[in-house]
Image (tube, rainbow, N blue to C red; front, side):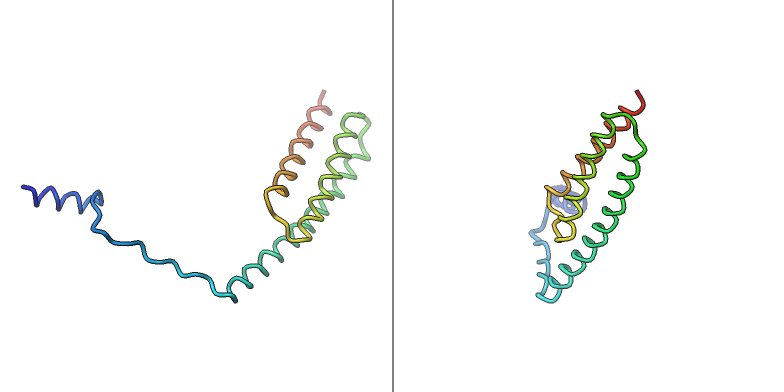
Length: 116
């Protein structure tokens, strides 16, 4: 009876047999360099896209008459410029992402202000 329970537990994966996870292969220096280069290219492409969106925000601001919307869109433009600079430098850290989040929140505020 004990063998049956033991076999059942092993089969269900509830009792390990001491198998270690296979050791993950560490990346070589060449692989690290390639990953860094890929990250850099992606960051630069995102910076270009960000710059285009900044121009769109400028056009949108020029069409506005509500001063609150204009002020919010000016803040958006400044934040977008800062993000573009960070991305051009390959900086995609948490601060860069936080700035992107702030941009989204300000655009949302501007949309709400415009609809009032």
